[in-house]
Length: 268
Image 1 (tube, rainbow, N blue to C red):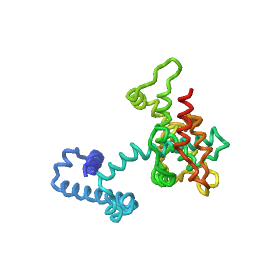
Image 2: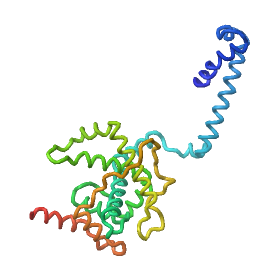
Image 3: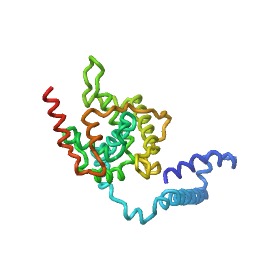
Image 4: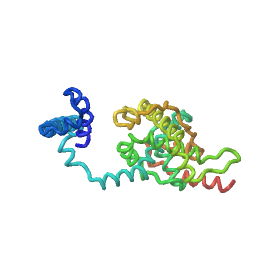
Protein backbone atom coordinates (compact mmCIF):
# COMPACT_ATOMS: atom_id res chain seq x y z
CA UNK A 1 0.00 0.00 0.00
CA UNK A 2 2.88 2.39 0.73
CA UNK A 3 4.20 1.86 -2.81
CA UNK A 4 0.78 2.69 -4.24
CA UNK A 5 0.60 5.92 -2.23
CA UNK A 6 4.12 6.82 -3.30
CA UNK A 7 3.14 6.32 -6.93
CA UNK A 8 0.15 8.63 -6.49
CA UNK A 9 2.31 11.26 -4.75
CA UNK A 10 4.78 11.17 -7.63
CA UNK A 11 1.97 11.85 -10.08
CA UNK A 12 0.70 14.88 -8.14
CA UNK A 13 2.92 17.61 -9.72
CA UNK A 14 1.79 16.61 -13.22
CA UNK A 15 -1.86 16.54 -12.13
CA UNK A 16 -1.60 19.98 -10.50
CA UNK A 17 0.10 21.44 -13.57
CA UNK A 18 -2.64 20.07 -15.84
CA UNK A 19 -5.27 21.94 -13.78
CA UNK A 20 -3.25 25.13 -13.30
CA UNK A 21 -2.96 24.70 -9.55
CA UNK A 22 -0.30 23.90 -6.99
CA UNK A 23 -0.01 20.49 -5.35
CA UNK A 24 -1.20 21.94 -2.03
CA UNK A 25 -4.27 23.47 -3.70
CA UNK A 26 -5.18 20.17 -5.35
CA UNK A 27 -4.76 18.27 -2.07
CA UNK A 28 -6.94 20.79 -0.20
CA UNK A 29 -9.94 20.22 -2.46
CA UNK A 30 -12.66 18.22 -0.60
CA UNK A 31 -13.42 16.11 -3.65
CA UNK A 32 -9.75 15.19 -4.10
CA UNK A 33 -9.73 12.90 -1.05
CA UNK A 34 -12.45 10.71 -2.59
CA UNK A 35 -10.74 10.71 -6.00
CA UNK A 36 -7.38 9.85 -4.44
CA UNK A 37 -8.89 6.95 -2.48
CA UNK A 38 -10.51 5.69 -5.70
CA UNK A 39 -7.23 5.90 -7.63
CA UNK A 40 -5.31 4.19 -4.84
CA UNK A 41 -7.88 1.41 -4.71
CA UNK A 42 -7.65 0.83 -8.47
CA UNK A 43 -3.86 0.78 -8.37
CA UNK A 44 -3.88 -1.58 -5.38
CA UNK A 45 -6.31 -3.92 -7.10
CA UNK A 46 -4.16 -3.92 -10.23
CA UNK A 47 -0.97 -4.61 -8.29
CA UNK A 48 -2.66 -7.37 -6.30
CA UNK A 49 -3.92 -8.98 -9.49
CA UNK A 50 -0.46 -8.86 -11.07
CA UNK A 51 1.09 -10.51 -8.00
CA UNK A 52 -1.66 -13.12 -7.86
CA UNK A 53 -1.45 -14.01 -11.57
CA UNK A 54 2.31 -13.67 -12.03
CA UNK A 55 3.56 -15.18 -8.78
CA UNK A 56 0.97 -16.75 -6.47
CA UNK A 57 -1.09 -18.72 -9.01
CA UNK A 58 1.98 -19.43 -11.16
CA UNK A 59 3.62 -21.07 -8.13
CA UNK A 60 0.64 -23.35 -7.49
CA UNK A 61 -1.81 -21.08 -5.67
CA UNK A 62 -3.57 -22.02 -2.45
CA UNK A 63 -2.82 -25.74 -2.80
CA UNK A 64 0.93 -25.10 -2.84
CA UNK A 65 0.64 -22.60 0.00
CA UNK A 66 -1.28 -25.11 2.11
CA UNK A 67 1.36 -27.81 1.52
CA UNK A 68 4.33 -25.48 2.05
CA UNK A 69 6.51 -26.09 5.14
CA UNK A 70 6.75 -23.50 7.88
CA UNK A 71 9.62 -21.05 8.23
CA UNK A 72 11.22 -23.17 10.94
CA UNK A 73 11.26 -26.23 8.68
CA UNK A 74 12.69 -24.21 5.80
CA UNK A 75 15.48 -22.88 8.05
CA UNK A 76 16.28 -26.41 9.24
CA UNK A 77 16.54 -27.62 5.65
CA UNK A 78 18.77 -24.71 4.66
CA UNK A 79 21.05 -25.46 7.59
CA UNK A 80 21.22 -29.12 6.61
CA UNK A 81 22.09 -28.21 3.02
CA UNK A 82 24.81 -25.77 4.03
CA UNK A 83 26.36 -27.89 6.77
CA UNK A 84 26.30 -31.30 5.11
CA UNK A 85 24.27 -32.17 2.03
CA UNK A 86 25.40 -29.30 -0.16
CA UNK A 87 29.03 -29.94 0.71
CA UNK A 88 28.70 -33.65 -0.11
CA UNK A 89 27.04 -32.89 -3.46
CA UNK A 90 29.74 -30.31 -4.26
CA UNK A 91 32.47 -32.75 -3.28
CA UNK A 92 30.99 -35.45 -5.51
CA UNK A 93 30.90 -33.04 -8.45
CA UNK A 94 34.57 -32.17 -8.00
CA UNK A 95 35.51 -35.87 -7.87
CA UNK A 96 33.66 -36.55 -11.12
CA UNK A 97 35.25 -33.51 -12.77
CA UNK A 98 38.69 -34.67 -11.59
CA UNK A 99 38.20 -38.11 -13.12
CA UNK A 100 36.98 -36.63 -16.41
CA UNK A 101 39.83 -34.11 -16.58
CA UNK A 102 42.83 -36.00 -15.21
CA UNK A 103 42.09 -39.73 -15.17
CA UNK A 104 40.67 -40.78 -18.52
CA UNK A 105 41.29 -44.47 -17.74
CA UNK A 106 38.62 -44.29 -15.01
CA UNK A 107 34.98 -43.81 -16.09
CA UNK A 108 33.83 -40.57 -14.44
CA UNK A 109 30.58 -41.43 -12.69
CA UNK A 110 28.59 -40.85 -9.52
CA UNK A 111 29.30 -44.44 -8.45
CA UNK A 112 33.05 -43.91 -8.56
CA UNK A 113 32.73 -40.52 -6.91
CA UNK A 114 31.06 -42.32 -4.01
CA UNK A 115 33.87 -44.90 -3.98
CA UNK A 116 36.45 -42.13 -3.62
CA UNK A 117 34.43 -40.42 -0.90
CA UNK A 118 33.86 -43.70 0.94
CA UNK A 119 37.61 -44.37 1.11
CA UNK A 120 38.25 -40.77 2.20
CA UNK A 121 35.67 -41.32 4.93
CA UNK A 122 37.31 -44.58 6.00
CA UNK A 123 40.61 -42.71 6.22
CA UNK A 124 39.01 -40.14 8.55
CA UNK A 125 38.93 -37.23 6.12
CA UNK A 126 35.19 -36.48 6.35
CA UNK A 127 31.76 -38.09 6.52
CA UNK A 128 30.32 -39.53 3.31
CA UNK A 129 26.89 -41.04 2.55
CA UNK A 130 26.64 -44.57 3.97
CA UNK A 131 26.24 -46.19 0.56
CA UNK A 132 26.08 -45.44 -3.15
CA UNK A 133 22.24 -45.30 -3.39
CA UNK A 134 22.26 -42.71 -0.60
CA UNK A 135 24.57 -40.48 -2.63
CA UNK A 136 22.36 -40.87 -5.71
CA UNK A 137 19.29 -39.87 -3.67
CA UNK A 138 21.16 -36.92 -2.19
CA UNK A 139 22.25 -35.83 -5.69
CA UNK A 140 18.65 -35.88 -6.87
CA UNK A 141 17.72 -33.53 -4.02
CA UNK A 142 20.77 -31.26 -3.95
CA UNK A 143 22.51 -31.61 -7.32
CA UNK A 144 21.09 -28.27 -8.39
CA UNK A 145 23.26 -26.41 -5.86
CA UNK A 146 26.31 -28.69 -6.22
CA UNK A 147 28.26 -26.33 -8.56
CA UNK A 148 28.13 -23.52 -6.01
CA UNK A 149 29.27 -25.70 -3.13
CA UNK A 150 31.96 -27.21 -5.36
CA UNK A 151 33.24 -23.72 -6.18
CA UNK A 152 33.40 -22.87 -2.47
CA UNK A 153 35.25 -26.12 -1.74
CA UNK A 154 37.76 -25.34 -4.50
CA UNK A 155 38.28 -21.83 -3.12
CA UNK A 156 38.81 -23.01 0.46
CA UNK A 157 41.24 -25.70 -0.69
CA UNK A 158 43.18 -23.17 -2.75
CA UNK A 159 43.39 -20.76 0.19
CA UNK A 160 44.32 -23.56 2.60
CA UNK A 161 47.20 -24.72 0.38
CA UNK A 162 50.00 -22.24 1.03
CA UNK A 163 52.57 -21.20 -1.51
CA UNK A 164 56.12 -22.45 -0.78
CA UNK A 165 57.53 -20.68 2.25
CA UNK A 166 54.20 -19.19 3.35
CA UNK A 167 52.03 -20.35 6.27
CA UNK A 168 48.60 -21.84 5.66
CA UNK A 169 45.65 -19.54 6.28
CA UNK A 170 43.43 -20.17 9.30
CA UNK A 171 39.67 -20.83 8.81
CA UNK A 172 38.96 -17.29 10.05
CA UNK A 173 41.38 -15.81 7.49
CA UNK A 174 39.84 -17.90 4.71
CA UNK A 175 36.36 -16.68 5.70
CA UNK A 176 37.59 -13.07 5.49
CA UNK A 177 39.13 -13.74 2.07
CA UNK A 178 35.89 -15.24 0.83
CA UNK A 179 34.00 -12.02 1.61
CA UNK A 180 36.25 -9.92 -0.64
CA UNK A 181 34.70 -8.84 -3.98
CA UNK A 182 37.50 -10.47 -5.98
CA UNK A 183 36.97 -13.78 -4.19
CA UNK A 184 33.20 -13.63 -4.69
CA UNK A 185 33.81 -13.08 -8.41
CA UNK A 186 36.11 -16.11 -8.52
CA UNK A 187 33.55 -18.34 -6.83
CA UNK A 188 30.70 -17.12 -9.06
CA UNK A 189 32.77 -17.68 -12.21
CA UNK A 190 33.85 -21.14 -11.07
CA UNK A 191 30.30 -22.12 -10.08
CA UNK A 192 28.88 -21.14 -13.46
CA UNK A 193 31.66 -23.00 -15.29
CA UNK A 194 30.94 -26.13 -13.24
CA UNK A 195 27.20 -25.74 -13.84
CA UNK A 196 27.72 -25.50 -17.59
CA UNK A 197 30.09 -28.47 -17.56
CA UNK A 198 27.79 -30.67 -15.43
CA UNK A 199 24.73 -29.89 -17.56
CA UNK A 200 26.64 -30.95 -20.71
CA UNK A 201 28.51 -33.99 -19.34
CA UNK A 202 27.03 -37.46 -19.78
CA UNK A 203 28.67 -40.13 -17.61
CA UNK A 204 29.60 -43.38 -19.40
CA UNK A 205 26.72 -45.85 -19.74
CA UNK A 206 24.26 -43.21 -18.47
CA UNK A 207 21.13 -42.26 -20.38
CA UNK A 208 21.01 -38.76 -18.88
CA UNK A 209 23.29 -35.80 -18.31
CA UNK A 210 25.01 -35.46 -14.95
CA UNK A 211 22.91 -32.41 -14.03
CA UNK A 212 19.52 -31.26 -15.32
CA UNK A 213 19.87 -27.68 -16.54
CA UNK A 214 16.24 -26.94 -15.63
CA UNK A 215 16.85 -27.87 -11.98
CA UNK A 216 20.28 -26.33 -11.53
CA UNK A 217 20.71 -23.05 -9.67
CA UNK A 218 22.16 -20.31 -11.85
CA UNK A 219 23.19 -16.97 -10.38
CA UNK A 220 23.11 -14.41 -13.18
CA UNK A 221 26.05 -12.04 -12.96
CA UNK A 222 28.52 -10.18 -15.16
CA UNK A 223 31.31 -12.57 -14.11
CA UNK A 224 32.78 -14.66 -16.93
CA UNK A 225 32.62 -18.42 -16.29
CA UNK A 226 36.09 -19.77 -15.59
CA UNK A 227 37.36 -23.27 -14.92
CA UNK A 228 38.24 -23.70 -11.24
CA UNK A 229 41.36 -25.46 -10.00
CA UNK A 230 40.45 -29.15 -10.24
CA UNK A 231 43.03 -31.27 -8.47
CA UNK A 232 44.03 -34.74 -9.54
CA UNK A 233 42.93 -37.60 -7.31
CA UNK A 234 45.66 -38.67 -4.94
CA UNK A 235 46.99 -42.26 -5.01
CA UNK A 236 44.50 -43.58 -2.47
CA UNK A 237 41.54 -41.91 -4.19
CA UNK A 238 42.62 -43.19 -7.59
CA UNK A 239 42.93 -46.72 -6.20
CA UNK A 240 39.39 -46.38 -4.86
CA UNK A 241 38.04 -45.23 -8.23
CA UNK A 242 39.87 -48.02 -10.08
CA UNK A 243 38.82 -50.72 -7.59
CA UNK A 244 35.09 -50.05 -7.69
CA UNK A 245 33.19 -52.26 -10.13
CA UNK A 246 29.53 -51.39 -10.56
CA UNK A 247 28.70 -55.02 -11.42
CA UNK A 248 30.32 -56.27 -8.21
CA UNK A 249 29.79 -53.58 -5.54
CA UNK A 250 30.15 -56.07 -2.66
CA UNK A 251 33.80 -56.63 -3.57
CA UNK A 252 34.61 -52.97 -2.89
CA UNK A 253 36.15 -52.58 0.58
CA UNK A 254 36.80 -48.91 1.49
CA UNK A 255 38.40 -49.73 4.85
CA UNK A 256 40.87 -52.13 3.27
CA UNK A 257 42.02 -49.52 0.75
CA UNK A 258 42.28 -46.82 3.42
CA UNK A 259 44.17 -49.22 5.67
CA UNK A 260 46.58 -50.17 2.88
CA UNK A 261 47.58 -46.56 2.31
CA UNK A 262 47.65 -45.87 6.01
CA UNK A 263 50.17 -48.69 6.48
CA UNK A 264 52.23 -47.47 3.54
CA UNK A 265 52.38 -43.99 5.10
CA UNK A 266 53.45 -45.35 8.48
CA UNK A 267 56.16 -47.52 6.88
CA UNK A 268 57.69 -44.48 5.21
